[in-house]
Amino acid sequence: MTIINPQSFADGGPEWVMRYGAPESIRYTVASLLGSYDYLLSSAITMKEATERLRLLRQVRATLEKDRPNGE
Image (cartoon, rainbow, N blue to C red; front, side):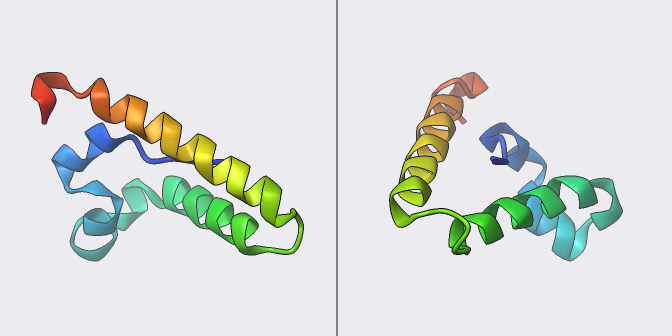
């Protein structure tokens, strides 16, 4: 599963880049994010597995948020 590093938001983040920036620069990252999202919503895994994966993604993101320089 793919998670966006919160530290990348200093540059506007993937949504901003896709809307207003140079989408080709992050196309593979965004494709991976969409694949992860689609997989979570699919019937390929159980609701329990999807919940566990989402919980893990949230834990990783929280850790990355804490590690942001200057508390930004």
